[in-house]
Amino acid sequence: MYLFDWLDHIDKIVFTFIHRDMSVRWLDVIMLLLRNQYTWIPVYAFILYWTLRLDRPTGLKFICLTIVCFAITDYTSASILKIHFERLRPCFDDDLTGVIRGIIGCGGKYSFPSSHAANHFGLSTFWFFTILHVTKQKWYWLWIWACMIGLAQVYVGKHFPLDIVGGAALGILTGLSLFKLFEGWVKRDYNKYLKNPSLSLP
Image 1 (tube, one colour):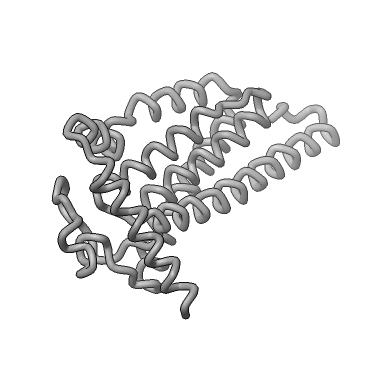
Image 2 (cartoon, rainbow, N blue to C red):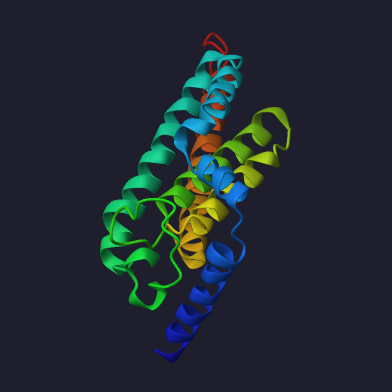
């Protein structure tokens, strides 16, 4: 129990540093934009554009598993783990009454793990390894994108740092699992083609 108390104490110290001590008015605006879902519409549009340039079977697999990835991370984090752990958000924590700056609404009562972090790290992981598998290109900016959103969640006071770590772990595990599913799916279809060349190549 002492270990969890120590981790909670360190987590609140880091949260206070990021949320209060790092705060600058112009940075408030940027961080609020970073965590806003509408800010990233161009990213999703670009991914869709990239997908449409793939052959149809591969593109459909990519889109299907992208949706599954988001569904798993969002439901697991919001409807299972948050209820199980019942960790209060910073704005509901009595220890942080004098720390919270109130630059955004509090939202739901529980915060662990961060659904934002789970969703974006899940997508980043699945996209990174799938794109690497398909094109041999390494889109490192996907990791930066997910990290920026995670940091913004702490900065605006929505989550503790460990909420982000927990969400990222869930997202990475989910993204890797679905990439392996994608890899196996493509390999299975290719093997079918080798056995029967009259079939269209997947």
